[in-house]
Length: 259
Image (cartoon, rainbow, N blue to C red; front, side, top):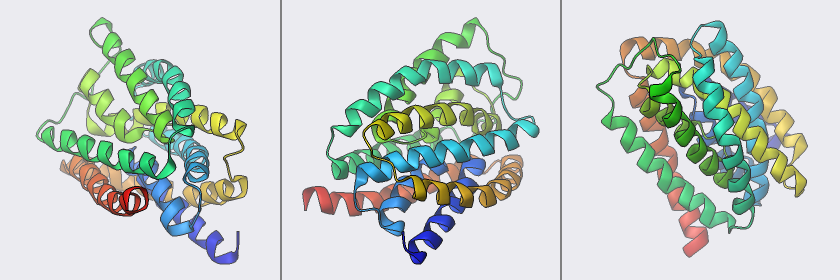
């Protein structure tokens, strides 16, 4: 990497760390397009593998911050993550064999669908006292397996799928879903990055710079998440971020894959 790429990677990492703490899924949906379109990683699969590792590391930091604030529902998050790890491994194996630009295009379409689902729920505050039990254990396992497969296939932490999945399975409050999602984001990202690393598809230096930048952004994201959650606007921010990035990715990857 040259100096400009290093600076851009650090700034991108800060934005990813900020958004991970803010909305859980923002880091994963931003990392891949930032790697490809801002930092300038020429190979989509290298960008995907490297971003998976960077997101996992930044998610672990965000998880620590949210856990200190009492936002994490550990039992729900651990069950969701355990169910999704097998899906993440299978999905990442399939993703490596898929055309990189078409993979980014499909990724953007899924993002739009998830954003619509989040907006449909915007009037619900959720349950802040959710506990793991018989009524939600099965749903958590099913949603976890599906989110893990998508996470692995697209090479992302998967928070933009995990947050809605946790809410659908348990009806937990948005701020709890954001914090709890980072348990699974960390697990899925590590599973995916290890699979990509085995094929030599990770830029380790770039990942290190990304993570270092994420250290700076994580604390600010947590503080803003608390304010937006209290105001009832966190779900809208989550959906808006997804739509903006998805539109850009559809334009760029669609031109490359089908132009």
